[in-house]
Each structure stands twice: as structure tokens, then as C-alpha cells.
Length: 424
Image (cartoon, rainbow, N blue to C red; front, top):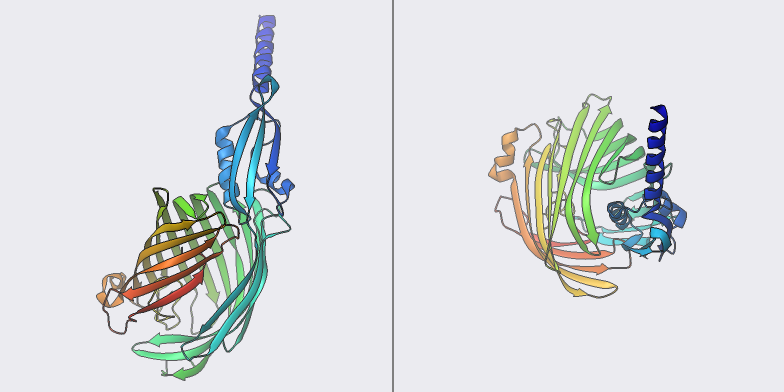
């Protein structure tokens, strides 16, 4: 009986071995790369020499590669050689990833401002982002950023950030407004962990110092003119990403959850929690249309303070509303737009878009019913243009004009919003 069993097991092993030799990959070629390192690509993909050919695994590798800043487009080819053995060719169209950052604008007090920076989104050819910026808006600010998602392995990475930020910001208490000089000096370290193609976590700590110094405007005995606060922030970011890219077109669903706990040993500001979730949904229409959506819902500890964390701002949530026009301890925003490509060349694409931005806020110390109060609801609609380089990472220059749809007191009638990169 043992002899028969051993013979049967030997037969299964030989059959399995012979079958595994069929459809086996004998070579994986990476073509089209310039600055990207082939060793890095081979490190992060599943498709490797000696494994059984799996078209589903190759498709996942292509999606992964197309999400890299250095990759404008990727596709694969499979070639059959002798004895049912296969060669796989992965073809990559690289983006240019060393990008300057240049912005000019005027503030509400007519101060001429500028921001100059330089970032490499493929530093050392290994999907590392490294760079920094200098900003002058009447005050000097700078930042240095390092992010290496695959520094330690395919799944583990690290991000380090330092920033010294200064800006003049309005604070709101009741119907009154005051302008303060805000200064934030921070040091942040984050661990990056990719569970699989669709799920990843970022987690870490941020040590920062906040200073508020009164400049002008209304005063109140309950609102200090100067604050100097040392704080500690614990951060967690969970991302579910099921997006697929084809040049300027996107389809699929993505969700990003941000959770932060801030501790502060001072009598004026208590420890507080803040969390918000961004939901993204993209759908292709025909060959040239793309319907895009972002929904954000967030809440923080509901302290009655003019220093509330959620801001109502042109460049963040509602195009046309103005710059830092209000603050709250809760936020609900829905941005929806339809983009249509009117020119598509090898290196350049131009899109038109029409959009509607809807937002509502919870007042500091208020109730959840604040989201439904007409005075807290803002709606802006508009249209715009996108000029997209298909050879340079994130090189989308956008112009939007948003005009007021809701008619609450004190609302801006609308205005132009410029930026680099899609709004969302």
C-alpha cells in the first residue's frame, strides 16, 4: 500500500512540475525607461522570471506603474517562445519629473507675493519625491519634503517633512474679523505601508509650534492678541485606491480617510480630534468625456474658537468663493465637473470643463443642524480650461471662473481661480 501511495505522489509531483513548466515566464523586459531604474521596477512588480504567466497579475502591475509620477503610460506585450515558454515586455512612457514651482499673486491687502520651488518626483530613479520651496507674501516661508514609498521594501516606505510657514490670516468671531500673523514651524515623520494594490496606510507624528500675532481689525477680551503654542499631532491616513489612468482620463473610485489627534498644553486650546474623508468617483463618457466627483465630509472637536480648523477657500473647496472667507468645526463639500477634451496631440491635451461646487459648514460651537442652515450653504458654478502636458508629471494648468448660485449675505459674486494640477 505504501509503495502505491508513494508512486501516486511521485506521479502528482512530476505532473505538477511538467505543468508548471508550461506557461512559464522566461524573461521580463522593461522598455522605454530613461531615469527610472530597472531594478526598482523589477522590485515592485509581481511579474517575474520563473513564475507562471498570469494576465491578471500583469494587469495589476500595469495599473501600479501608471500610478507612479514618473510613468505617463504603460502597456505590455506577451511573446510565445519554444516549449510553451513566454517572454513579457513591459513598455513605459516616462514623464519628465523635475519640476519648478512658480506662483505669483496678490493678497487682500495688495501685497505682491510669490512662491518658488523645485521638486523631483522620481529622485534617484526610484519613485522618491524630494524638493522644497520658498515663499514670500510679505513674510518668509519655506518647506522641505522627502517621500520614499518603497524605501525599505515593496510595501514599506518613509516620509519626512519640515516647514516654516507664515501668512496673514483672517479670524472670525461673531460678526467681527481680525487679521493675525500665523506662523507654523513643524517637523513630521510618517511610516508608509502598502497592504496591496488598492489599500495603504500612512501613520506618524508631527511636532509643531504655532504662533498667532494680532495685526489689525476687531478685538475681543476673550480672544488673545498673541499665542505661542507647542503641539503634538498624531496622524493616520488610510487610502483605498481603485483608479485606472489613461493619460488625462481617469475612471474608478478612491477614498482617503484622514484622522488626527492634536495635543496642546495650554489654557486657551484644548486637545482636539479632527477627521475627514475624501471620496472620489470618476467615469469615462465616450472617448473624450470624463465626469469627476469629490465629496468631503469632516468633523473636529466642536470648540467655540475663531481658530477653527476647516476653512472656506477658493483653492481648497469652492471655486469663486474667495480666499479664507470663513472657518468651521465641520465641513461638507461636493465638487462635480464634466471635462471634455477638445484637442489631443502626442504631447498636449486641452480640456474644457463645467462644474458645480456645493459646500456647507458647522459653526464653531454649533450643532449638526448648522449644515442645513441656509446661511451656511454656499453654491458656485462655472466653467474652465485645462492645458495638459502629456510628457510632464502633473503639468496641468487650470483656469476656472466660478460664479455665485446661492445668495447669502456677504458672499463673493465669483471670480477666477488659477492653479497647477486638476482641482481634484
